Length: 206
Image (tube, rainbow, N blue to C red):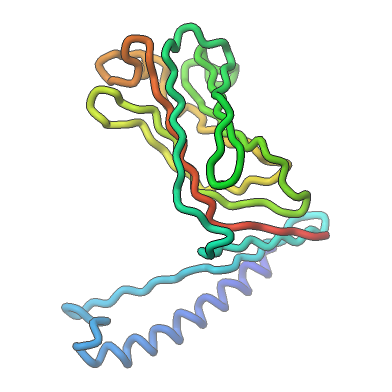
């Protein structure tokens, strides 16, 4: 694994060095727009990342912004009319985003490991092909119904058959959540929103 990471780093450095030479040459012309006030900006985009795992399993992760793989962000809002009647745990209705079925799970009284916090779980209900997975950019929000200052966090997550659930541990304390002045719980009602965008796929083989 270390040797392969080093090999990838060498390729990136060579690429950057070649791109730097191109930029310096082009930047000599002010009209090019590459050099503004004696400053220029470099960017790197990884289109394909290869990682080696144990037991001689090779996994290839593709980050592709193509019409058949990537998708625009799609959102679902779970409107809970009475938070205090929820069971521990409680699950949202099933919903579909980006061609996949999902559901949210929360523990209104806190879970065993995070007793004083709300830690939402997002689970994919679909069964994926045994040798493939998807990469998604996912965000979850607890809506502030008073001011619009939502509690929001995001992550880039790889979903496959063995890991179809993601947890945001200790997203918000129950004390803050139940504080009416913060707007998360208003007259027993709360709203949890999930946003998903599929940005790539993965495939592995032994």
